[in-house]
Length: 277
Image 1: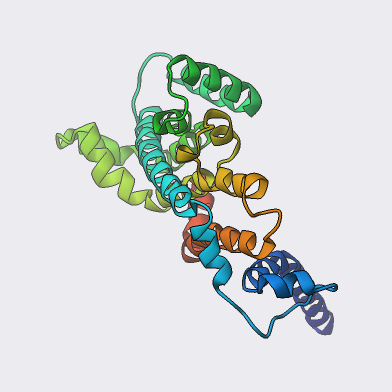
Image 2: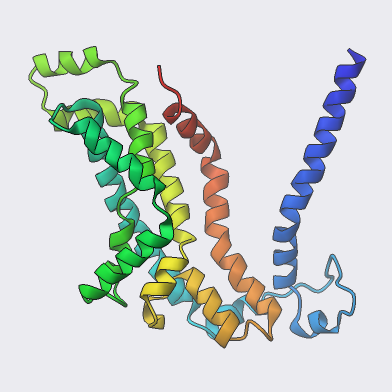
């Protein structure tokens, strides 16, 4: 009994230390963002607190660079991409889990095989396609390559297959259409997994960097990730570190809040999607 208490105590100590290590960069980011520019530059040895916090850095982050536009672009890109992707994922997962058609297993195997292709090769193909269509520096060019995901289709398909086939058969006997069965039975039952997919896709879109950086060179279409890079390279990022950290805090805050609110649903949805039977 005593050994179990000691082991539990050591476990909590290690977890606490690990938690502090993970959270320290966020603390340092917020601390730097509220430090005065002059006081920050005057610190020969970095201080772990400040007695004169200021919000001036946040004002500069919005006034000296078009941070609000980067933010708005990212919101539009995230909402449209997530909505289309969820619609495609739900319909594809339903087709693979409930409908019977020739070549279904072969087609799904081909879908899974796409996960083995390196992302770099896909990016090159997408870049050539989008450029050929004349969609560079457009929201359509940003959105189109991100409206489907083999992994999310697989995750939701496994979840759909946990619903008993007898329920589907009974619905068909009662004259229920496939679309009605999907929207009134399968989606409500698998809501935790769908919510998880939505949240993960929102995070993925918000953090997207390589593709937006490749397909856009016009600042009117920059997302927050590219905007931060632009601020660091051509804005005040190299000189005014506190203002740079303020911009990073503003951009990071929505995702942090989103994860804190829906963390239980994320864990629940992933566990439901990965468990069969």
